[in-house]
Length: 231
Image (cartoon, rainbow, N blue to C red; front, side, top):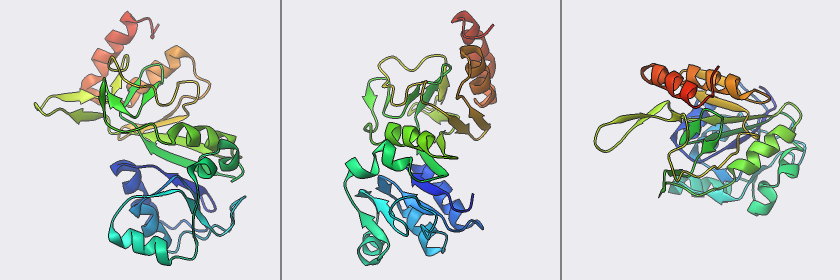
C-alpha cells in the first residue's frame, strides 16, 4: 500500500516483485533492508520511494549490503538518500518494527506441511546462508500493519530433469529450518497466497497443499494423512 516500508531479500522472485512495484502506481514507499538489490534501485528511479512515512530514518534508504552491477554501485555512491549502516542496525527486529506497514519479502527453497521454511539448503547441500530472513520475518510482525511474505515457485527441476515440489510433507533430510513455523506468516507460490499465522496443524497442511503444484497435490494429501497431518 502507499507509504509501506519495504525489505526485499536476495533472489530472482523478490527482485522480480521489486520491478513490478516500480511499474505500479504506489507512492511514498520507504526502504529498510539488509540487502539493497537492483530491483529497489528501479523502484527509487521510478519515483516510488520517498521514505516520508517511515518511523525511523525518515527520507532515507537504510541498508547494510549491496550486491549487483556497476550501475547499482554507482547509484549507491551518488544517491544522497542511501544510508549504509551495519547489519546489527538494519536487522534489529525492534528497529524494523518502528516502521508502520512494514512489508518483508523473501525467497525460500522448501516449505513443509507444518509451515517450517528452509531457505538455505536442499537437504545437506548448502545453497545460501541464514542471512536476515528471520530478523525481518519477526520485525515485520512487530510493525503496525506489517506483513512477512515468503515466496517460492511451487516446483524446481533437478539436473537430471526430474521436477520436484518445493512444498513437502517434511523438509528434505538434513535441510535447515531458517524460519520456524511459529514465526511464519504469508507463504506465496504462483498458485496463491496463504496466511499460516495462528493456524492449526491440519489447517496449515490443507492451506499449503492448496498452493502446491496441482501435479503433486494428491501425493501430498496421501502423505499428509499417513503422517497424521490431515484428518
